[in-house]
Length: 77
Image (tube, rainbow, N blue to C red; front, side, top):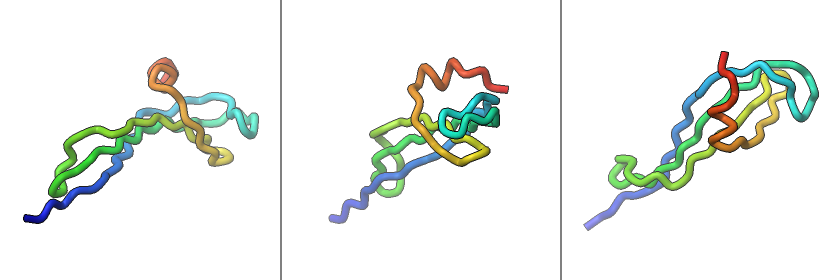
């Protein structure tokens, strides 16, 4: 009997916020993405392992993690 398992990460775009970047200090669009990693069995994602929220500056490209509460509080426009 063979078990085929692995990890699969899905990336979904939550929104875009206009804010000041922590890295470069420019007022630019910040893209909020949700990255969910799930354990998959026979290519079917079953168990969520980790969920991260990331904010990326569209000017300099730096990414930094934000909490779930911060991602929900940001005014998406």
